[in-house]
Amino acid sequence: MTIENNDFPLVYCNGDSYSNNNYDESLQNSTYDFVVAKKFNGFNINNAISGSCNRRIIRTSVADLLEQRKLNPTQRIIALIGLSFDLRSEFWNDDFLKMPRRHEIDAESSVYESDFISYQFSNAPNWVELLKKGKIIEPLTKHAGTNFSKKFYNMLNNVRAFFFSPYAERINLYCDLIMFRALMDSLDIEFLVFNSPPRETDMSNEATLDLFSHQIENDSRFIGFSEEFSFCEYLADNNFVPLDFIDNPSIGHFGSDGHKYFAENIILPLLNNT
Image 1 (cartoon, rainbow, N blue to C red):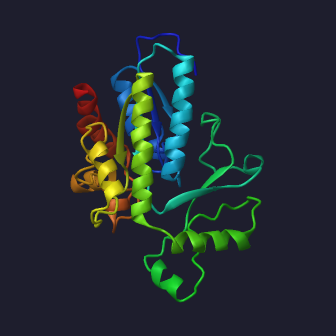
Image 2: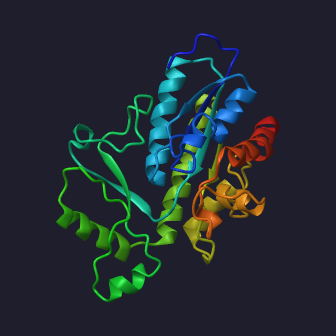
């Protein structure tokens, strides 16, 4: 996407279903990034895909923003990145792009998806107990129509669940974010990163995690990382009613009114301050 008029910024957004303007009809052109783009009379690119893991979000953002800076070397670019659940991961499946794609992906989406597939190994709250009993952990993500073996997918899923550690996930994520920040600074791209759903908070001291977390939590561009702030909990605390998960709004998807409130009360003031 080449922008001829450099007087208006490009607002880039990436994340999972909480940032995806295709998640619900009411969110079409109404997610928080569209509100920000409208405020600045700017252009908008939303490459959020439902079910995304954090690795996919950061990797495709890096690729997309490198490309946008090349196409628009003097353009003001603002990147808004919503992070996902720690439980999600991904694997590589050859020729996935030749198979029927996930319905969220359309002609405007990133060309840098490659053959990675995001998935979540379980949605069951008792998955640890199930593993101990030798049960198969059913993956939340089914990927209907794809060409990989269900047998090996289930094996991969159980291994992933067995060795899952929130410490490992947080350390690797924070490492990615530190490098993401350095790249954005080198490209002169403004950015804000926040947790969309809430994160695991009951974690004791660990040397590498503490080192990385201090780097992230002291930078206001990483919104509320020291307080474990999240998009979902912020809107629930401000009495917005989600489109789904009414009984558990901390992981619910919110409508356009919530996205507008988040943009006007969190994102825009921070952009003005930075």
